[in-house]
Length: 404
Image (tube, rainbow, N blue to C red; front, top):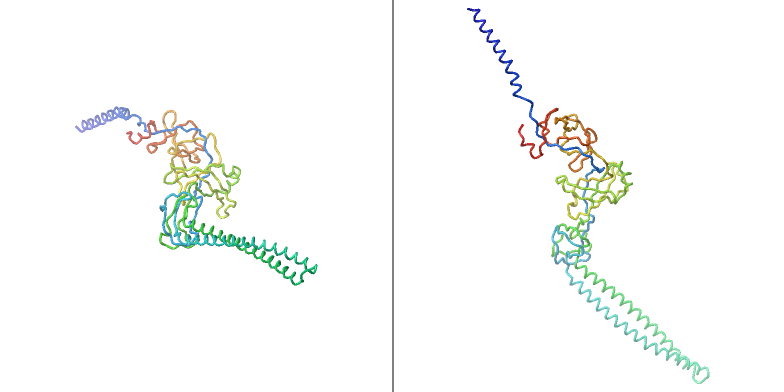
């Protein structure tokens, strides 16, 4: 009976082994190959890429004017809005003009008085000239009569003295005329000065730009050329961006020259917004502490994207590089051994490939080595991939929605 029990157990073991052997191929056949991974792809292309130097720049106004009063007086009114744009020649402030109007009237009255004195002196000169001629004629006649003994010598000397007195009177008249003319010139200068001071009662914008905060309010007394300005105006069209580059680039920049090299400025929080300008100033000294040369670029800034005091990303274009291999920036991934991309092979499987990257070009990256033009790289969906994985290209917007 024990033998029969052992035989039954042996028969069951053999049956189970046969069943498992038959079902294994069927299970493998049912599992099949792994599904294709949905990814987005792009083709590496050849493009003309600019050779650029990148730096951090500081935005500076092209002109800063501290508006001050050139005359003392009471500030009557303000005619601009703080923080607003002002045009050159626009009225900014008005100072009490009454003291300067009085000074102008006094200068004009002095001019009228001295003009009248000049006319009087000229009339005196005319009268005395006629009298002097008559006195000279009489003196000559009586001198001749004295020589003939007709009259005494004392009588002749008397007429000669009268003629000499008249000649001195002419000199006095001429001096009076010169004095009156000098007074008139002084009066006219006083009038011009009074008119100038009166015109300075209206303080106008010396440049077009952006007005800052109001520093002196109406009702205050202002002094001429005070240390404290009334307002500060920054000219922001055009505007400057100053930045430094390594001194090794100085010779290249000097060969191209200021006024020819294009400069691009962008913002860290808004990289899509860019402003374009041109290099205008190369500093005359290399900073020995940093080994950099200071440059300045000019931007028209018509859209007023740049603002004084901002920090911006600056790209100075030195040259153009032909036939550079370019891929979308999303294709490049970081790993422990460096950067790599997934390259799609003809059988639609992928292989990771280490790459050496160059500069960025507005969302694209130059590949120095590792990928050739025409090869297809994965740009989205890399987290699901592994070496040899089968892929299925789909639009980038549908990568995350695809189910394996």
